[in-house]
Every structure is written in C-alpha cells, then in structure tokens.
Length: 480
Image (tube, rainbow, N blue to C red):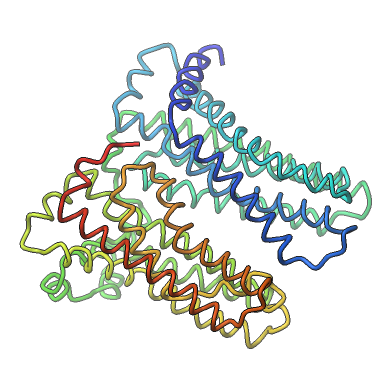
C-alpha cells in the first residue's frame, strides 16, 4: 500500500472534481427518501411495529441500491485507463498490478462510503421510532458490507477485462448478479440450518462475513491475473466473447437466428444495425429466458412479485435506449448517418423499432405472466403495495423515446440512464401507487392518467430529439 498511496491520492483528487459523485450521493439519498415515503404511505402496521419494519425496508432498499450502483461506479476505473493509454504509464513506475488494483479498490471503497453517509439521516429515523434491536442492526451492517465489497470486486474484475464504458458496465452488473445470487444462496442455507436464539444469529453473521472474506480476495486475485495478461491490449475493440463465438460459429444456431437481412436493410438500415450482431440477438433472447425462469419462481414460490420484475425490465430498456445514439455520437458515426440519404425521421424510427423489437418478447411474456399471477394468486398479488406498477407498453415506449433523446446528452452514462428511468417509469409508477393507496382511485383512471403523462413526455422528447439531430445541436453541447 506504500506504493499505491500516491495513486489513491491521485484518484481521490480526480474524483473530487467529477460532478457525478455528488449526483450519486443525492440519488442514493433520494432513493431512501422515496422508499421511506412510500412505506409510510402504504403501511398499516401499529406504531409499536413501525420502527423495526421501516428499518428492514430501508436497509433492503440500500442493499439493492449498492448492488446496482457500486458495480457500475467501479466498472470503468481501469478500462478507462486502457482506452486513454495511461495504464502503461503507471507501470513505468515501481507500481505492480496488485498495487494498481488495490489503489482503485481503496478509492472506490471511499466513494461508496460517501453514498452510505448520504443515507444515514434516513436510516436513523427507525431508531427514533423504536423497536429496532441491535441484532437487526449488526445483520444489516454485515449485509451492506457484503454488497459493497462484492459489488466493487465485480466492477474491478469487469474493468480489468476491458472494453467500452457500456460494455464493462454490463459485464460488471452480470458479475454482481452472480455474486449476489451466490451470497443469497449461502445466507439462505445458513439460515435454514441455524438454530434459534443467539447462537443461530451468530452463525448467520459468521457465514455472511466469512463468504465475503473468502470471495473478495479471490475476485481481486482473478482481476490481478487478468490485468497482468491484458494490460497492453487495446480494449476499445475487445475480442468476441467465447460464449458468443460458440453460437456464431454453429451452423444450427445460424439457421435458428437467420432472418431476411436484405429486406430489413431495404426497409430501414437503422433497425438492422440494432440487431445485426450476435451479441444483440443473444441478449434479446437472453432477456426472454431470464424472465421465463424468474416468472417460474414467482408464480409458484414468490407470488405477487410482478411489480419488482417489471421494474427490472424497465431498467434494462432504459439502459439500452440511453446507450443507443450515444455510441454513434462518441465514435462520430452519427454525423456520417446524418449525411446519408436517410432522413432524420427514418433514423429515429429505425432505431426506435430496433429497440422495441429487442425487448418485445420479454415484454409480452411479462404481460401474460402478470395477468396469470393476478388470477392464480389474487391474495398475495393484491397484498403487494406496488400492485399498481403495471407493465404498461406505453411506459416502455416512453422509456425508449426518452432514452434516445437523453443519449445525445454529454452527461455521465449512469446519470443519463437513471434520469431516463426516473422520468418515464419511476415517477409515473410512484404516482400510481400514491393515487391508488391515498385517493383510492380506480385502476383504470390511474392507468389513463399515467399513460397520458408518459405519452406527453414521449411526444416532447421525440420533438426535441428530431430538432437536435436536424440542427446538429449534439455537436456543440459541452461535456459535463
């Protein structure tokens, strides 16, 4: 760490000048405040039970936010050095690969700690209400530390492998999902075999901490090994992943995924650009299979969780839309597309159709299973306070349009992604829950009001997107 200390100081100075860090702290605090307000608005618990239940909900929300934000926040820390050519300069110094990895880890632990500090004021309120026991507090600290360290390890491993900013973010979230699932399985098994009382609680704590202390060094060691082998490789154009090569080299899968390219190219090449790669096609059906597995679990083991699954799919749609024109803008391809015989309207419609086609199988499956869960498990389904979060096709269409418009902005990708999701999905969904719980409004009226807002938002963003592309305003926008 004596060698890595100058790198830590350098990274902290650089991060202190990035507005994204202040935005992430506000975002974390806003998530906790929203969960706090939503819980108080929908709960029917007695005052004596309110403190413990509120603390459990808030720490779960913070735990989930850490698993989402920390991997993405860490994902580009090393791959950016590769793209900018500064990683080799670091290795001209006495720094070793392990020194660089540990310096990045320490820096992002401190960054993540600021997110936790931003949420502390709201986490203190359940203690004021009373009912929170110290065992519950210690378990929450262990789970949050587990999410923070493993989420950061997933981001470091993805960043060591390299790639564009969006590619490493996607990889980081996939690795984080795997680690979260493994951690959840370990915690579930430890809880099932633990005895009651203090000894059982101690066993669960020791299992959670032990899993973290074992997996975190293993992932860091794997990151060191990968970075040692690939630090001098150009990460802007990474090799095709092995799992993609397996499908693309197979005659069987080529036949399965065969489609009329010439017809699509003649109709609108922008739609073809969205689906031409094997990665895009496999991701499309990967979403479908992932939702199919999740729905199988929800319908029979966790009924009433359809709103949560709808939220996950909405985050994926927002991610894809906000990364769409962003790639062309950064590479300069968007300027070339605008001087082709294709009109601005054709470019916009083609890209929108490509994104819609990418998610339509998953969205159709979600709508069918949402209604199936409502009919098969009516008691558990309507007991969920977020039952009004419906997989509305208009909401997902608004997400795509708003994401396309914001993809031309030069803000940090994480900020743009979450902003598009909040405007087109979170605010209408939160309003629907409030109208249903507070005002007792009928579901059809709530559906009409939220749909009207989303249609108006999509229309405004569509007009602004067309204006910006016609006037080339994205060329003069300042980077933030």
